[in-house]
Each structure stands twice: as C-alpha cells, then as structure tokens.
Length: 360
Image 1 (cartoon, rainbow, N blue to C red):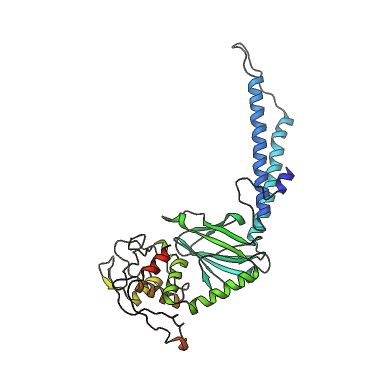
Image 2 (image 1 turned 120 degrees about the horizontal axis):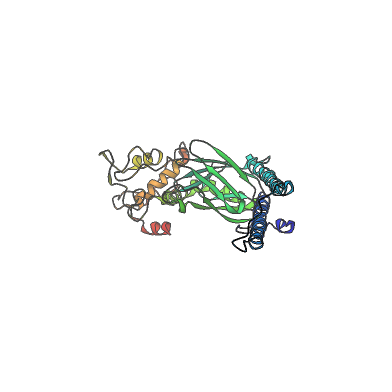
C-alpha cells in the first residue's frame, strides 16, 4: 500500500501531477480508492461465504436467533472510524495547503476574469491575454471573478479547481513544477457553449516568462490596428458569440455590420459607427439588437482604448458597408500626443484574407 501511494506518477484515472499540491491530493485519492476496493472485496467475500455456509438446507431447518457480540460490534465500528478520521485529517491538511498561498505568491498575482464563454488573464503590470503564462517553480496567486454566471477554474494536471462567482472575488494558488502546456477548463456548466470554454496554462522558465511579459507590453504599442482588433477578438472571447462570416450566433455577426443601421429590441435604430461599437463593448445592454438576448458582459476596465480602436478598424475592414479609410498604424494611447498622427490611412474595403486567417 505504501509503495503504491509513493508513486504519484502512476495514478489511476488522473493525469500526472504537475504541481506542489498534486502529490498530497493523489496520495489521498489512492488511499480512498484502495481502501474502498479492499473493503468491497472483504465485505462481499464474507457475504458470499455466509450465504453458502449458512444456507437453508431443507424446509425443516430452523435458524438459531442472533446473539450479541461486543467483539464483533467493536470490530465493525472501530476500524472504519479510524479510517474515516485518517481520511479527514489527511484531506483537511490538503484543503488548507490548497487554500493558504505561501509567502511571495502575491508578488506573482494574476486576475482571472471569466465570462460566457471565455477566460481572460490580467498580470501585475496590466498586461492581458487569453492564455495563462506562469514561471515554473514559482507560487502564483489567482484572484478569480466572473462578469455573468458561476464558472469554475479547473486545471486537472495541477489538481486545482475553484469556483468563479459573480459579485465577489475568490482566490486560489498553485506552483507548477514542470515546463509545458496544460489544459484549463470551466468545470461548472455555464450555458450553451460551456464546452468551448477551454484555454491553456503555459508554464515557462523565468527567462521565457519575462520575455513573454515584455512582448505583451509591446503588442498594443506596435501592432497595426486591424491586427490588434483580431487579437482582441480572440483574447476577449468575442469569437464565442460573433462570427466573421455572416452567420449569426449567440450575438450578431461582425461581417458587414460597420455602417449598417441596426434595429433594436425597443423599436429604435442606430447606425453602426465608432461610438456605437465603443458603447456596445463597454455598455452592451444599452442598445440590444432585436432578436438577441442581453447576455454579453461589459468589458469596462478590462479592454484598453487602443484595443477598442483595433476592434473598430477590424469591423471596418470586413464590412462592405464601409468604404472609408482604415488605420494602418498602432493607435495612440490617450494623452500620447507623439502618436496622435499615427492614424495614417490605407484605404477601405473588405479584408477577406485577414478574416480567413483569423477564423482559422
């Protein structure tokens, strides 16, 4: 039994553990599993033996009435009690380890924002991405929040699972022990496209992680607006509800929408322009398009102004209803006078190549 418990890599029904808490979790799991198997065999074996040995051999057999046995009662009471207490203490220690982040974890804090049906990760420097990157052998503190319904942050390889609840902040942590890519799921049914709410945790060396953070810093300042819009389309989960090919989903398609006049649920209408797109991102319930439910979360405080500009330019580039100029340089940040004239133009029209690449 001890030899089995010591081999954390050889777990039944579980992927190999890749975090510091995995060994304790897997050890308890193996203990409960094998105790259940042993007791099942023992109890079932005794039952079968008694059925055969004490079966009624003729209609005239009269069974002897049961008698009291203190030894037997203690035998079936004390061992299970001891096992249950072992499981409780073992599990409680593991629970405390999983819920009490070690010193230094807050220096590597990541804000995890869940929404239907997307994960978004914001790092200490304000950088944002749709995949979670962390340095190896470093405790990572996670602050979890949801903008709509209950989700659940679940990384099987790390044995980490925590509910993400709207209207409050939950916290958890982990320390990955091996470089690699690991699946991150939502483990709480959250609506129509729950099964698509999947991303990756990328565990890197400290040097690679630092380079990744520097790259995120450079993206918004250097990426052309349409490309920045494509990135936002993926990072913020827009693709879960809005297609780029004209097919309506949970939300209206972005194809040919810029310059179009939208009719809203209250009977009013409005032309899709820059202000309309910005309002739809920051206050999605303000103008609800007829035929669609108000399920989109607000991205107020999450998306940067340059990224909103990128989304606007992306919409322009795939709309046949727009024939004006499209920015071909990175948009200036608010208050950045040096970049105020960065919005040179490169013509309008429909960027079908960019659309196809993004969908792929």
